Length: 250
Image (cartoon, rainbow, N blue to C red; front, side, top):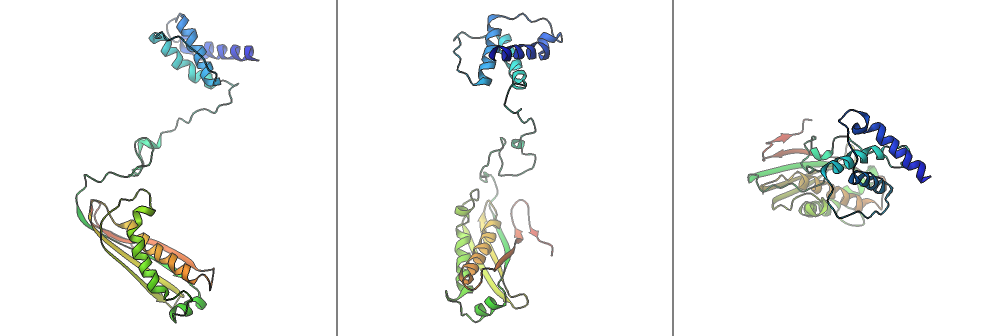
């Protein structure tokens, strides 16, 4: 079986390499060249192979570079061909949290200007009529739902960098969370604002504030209903920074 495999490899080399197909000048194989072919086969088969410590000449190195892709495409190989599509590391998408090699990274903001930045986010917690009436009457077993959720949202904003891996640990100068009961759809509407003077924005802090507040509402009401929904988590506006101000169009 090994004999047929090696024969197949040699056939692939002689048919597909330019130096054998007449596309280039005649290439005379040296001892190092044969060693290069053997090393290529061994590497693909994952077989240990001891080679001489003597340096190879450049032509042998070139041959090894040619042989590897040829043998890798051999029909007897179980390995899949390498993906030759453009790497994400080229960062053509413009995503700042992706490095040049496609790895995740925390963005270096040390070169950014220190400016005053704000953000506001919102979400909605749909309770249903039964739970809504209990919350409005402050009759939930766990206590005052809206007050506890407000404090939780503020605490959540301060923990954003611990919860979101690539967020910077920034100095917040202001956090405000407001919860309002909406009898039209039996929901709690939550708004959160954050502010800071620094090198990066506070959008994630505002969104974390309303999300944690919404989760707290759910936790305090889940004994009465498991069908509560947290919806429409979104950034409403942001100000400051290089990108300027942004407002969501309703």
